[in-house]
Length: 320
Ligand code: ATP
Image 1 (cartoon, rainbow, N blue to C red):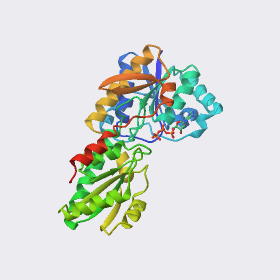
Image 2: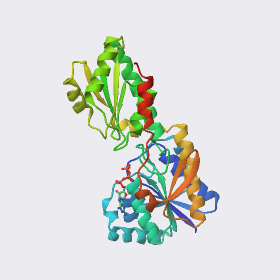
Image 3: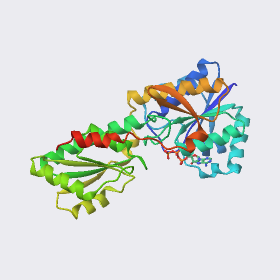
Image 4: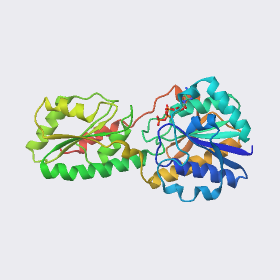
């Protein structure tokens, strides 16, 4: 093996650059060459590929987004697209790849492995919705962004005795909502994985107000419904002077946290070791602070296990 290709695919996540840097620099340390593939599988098929030099990676560890850009390219699900990608790998002499993205990207990675190009997947998504890893690259940063926003919202909610429904990202997973909600002292956390009841939430707010709690914050996972719709439904149970707030794409940007940078660096270097061992079709994760690998095939049959006890914890420690 002489050349490793690296691409980022699906939604961008803070810390992807730290992972790209770690893969490329570890490859160089092992006497290999690293090639950056722009725009995910779209760039692979188009041959938007360039050699990475060590200097290209200066300073990127602290930058959000992805220096390799990202794209959604559904055509890669078809063999025709995959074969075009393989042609480019041959043309550039790339022997193996590291794909940083979500589970959709892992499907593309597995197809490349099946075509004889060992590919390792790293979990790059703020949603924390990938099986067999406690954390994904970008999750910690996104949660910290939410906590900063929620702290600010708390200030104004408290000043005006208002209720805020704050919608956070996470797709079908409630991890971002749970972590941000606990960290910011939310009064309710509503996630798609658990049953919830609007009347109970309304009663909580009424109870809180009657007992001198001046602000109420509901953290709502986007997988449940939008903040505006939630506020409308909540208003059927009383007038809580409620405002809807959607934090939105700012959760995807910004300087990655140290935790994301370190985790991405560990995973990136490990991916190169796995490729040097001749492995492919594996997804890297972190479980109990240990790097682990699982077959992508197993991963597709599994579901991420969220730490659902966090909502119960929140109920125990919120204003009661
Ligand atoms: P995120 O969690 O941020 O959405 P993701 O990796 O799951 O990330 P997707 O849009 O599902 O995002 O997938 C990214 C890309 O992976 C697709 O645009 C496509 O190029 C490739 N891909 C997805 N599914 C497949 C598949 N079944 N076979 C081959 N390639 C695929």
